[in-house]
Image 1 (cartoon, helix red, strand yellow):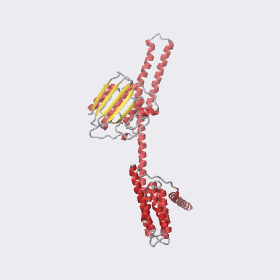
Image 2: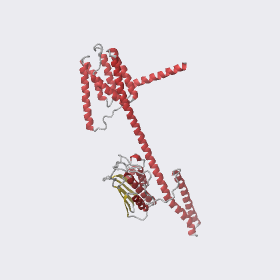
Image 3: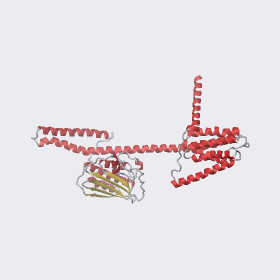
Image 4: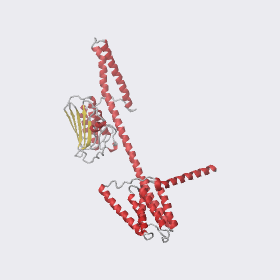
Length: 473
């Protein structure tokens, strides 16, 4: 019995302390929060709306003065009217302080009217009540449940109760007033809760998009690493074979030269072993090693033929340059064309696609242009956006080789992907230079970090890499 009583007293004390804290916060401690003033309107519209609000507040104050002057001296009537209505001017910058001032004005008016008010009597001007209700609503909408509860309790105890005791405010009228203020507070708090929920959902969506973007970058880098393994492993194997065969080709080599070739062969074999171990860590658990050779520029015509057989309208132009380019550039050109062609087929069905691959002594230029689908409208890239998974992969490949890649809407309504991949390897660049030279989208910089737009928001994109109906051989 004693334990139950102590628990009940403890719970009652905690609730009393919480109510006291809510009253203290609403009456004094809680800081003011700025209220956005028509953020979607332009500056002239905001100024016009502010002027209209100023005139309305002055009208409310003048009306309150006309009603109060019949009950209190003129100078006091104007002061009370200003204290009740003019705090509306602070509603944007200091809404809670404005409510406190208006509530104080209503309470002081009740005390000033003692002995002068007829009974039964409603002691406050209608215009002052309108201003007070607006302030109550804004306060609840801006601060939420806790402050709304404190405001409700203070309004009932510090504004309505003195009127009941001092100027014979009818209890029914008091009850109606308390209910009306409570309903306004509930409405404001409901809007506040909904806005907070939308804000949390937006933050969660931004985090989800950032996570998807990082995952897209990591997946594409893992894929690039596996392809590089296939390219580098071939050359390392050739080094090991040549180093092992050299003593047999030249039987009279000195012993020191033989030991040198042996060291080269062992180093090459060790490098291959370590590289396979690292690549094995990058593979998925159910993903086996790729046996087929990596495709290159010479396989692009096969890809185009497969796309045509799937119903796409594709033109291909291969021009100029040396017969062979570095293997990693060769693979990257194929993958960029593959991603761009897949995106055009997915997001602009029925469009005409033109592919141009131009090889020169300094590098390879790739351009994939579609004229837009006749029955669809592309969604433009958002400011600072970088597109989706397909664009992420193309960007990573261009950045790996020290090249550039640009993708964005063309003037005719289609989409253009342009890449330049140097054949002399990537140059040493600063982070700022990376952001300037690797650019995706019409307004967003391209950097080596994760993109800020999720695959769901891409104007073009590819989740798999190879378009439907296309093969690699």
